[in-house]
Image (cartoon, rainbow, N blue to C red; front, side):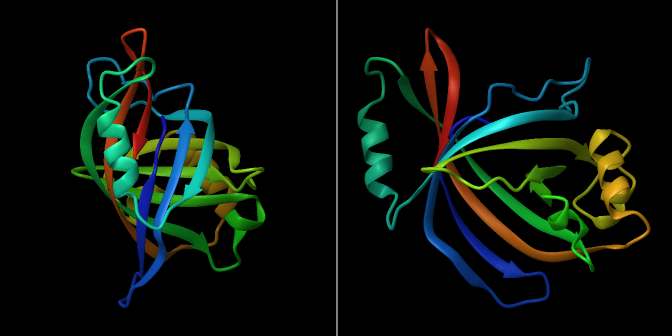
Length: 193
């Protein structure tokens, strides 16, 4: 959730690699952040609408310098956040059931945590994209863990796939430097480069 800008490199699951974009920047504002399950550090499943603004840039260094120069200025106040490394694997059935239903299915490894997301395929209008996201923490970034997910995402995946087996399409590794945007002392959004 939050505001994000990112660079992506893609590699087919079975070797080789290609660049999707030298630098792809996007800003998204997610009005809801995943709730944490009581007495747990594991986020509870979420089903929300994400609003995202996308921008392409050949070089994100000038953006990073501009953000660092804005630190502590008038609203929104910008401060550096953490560096995030994600490995995303996109999953589909052989007859493209998720795509035909208007969704992309992603497995994400975030450090030691794994999650699965079903994301609607909404077209951008003037750089703005609004889409539904259903996310659930799973035991690992594997097809087996995805198939045994017990929450709302698991239910949607089983309903869409039916008896068709899931298969991995490709993998995307993402390196993000986050910046926090605060209004009235609380984080309103995250910008990731």
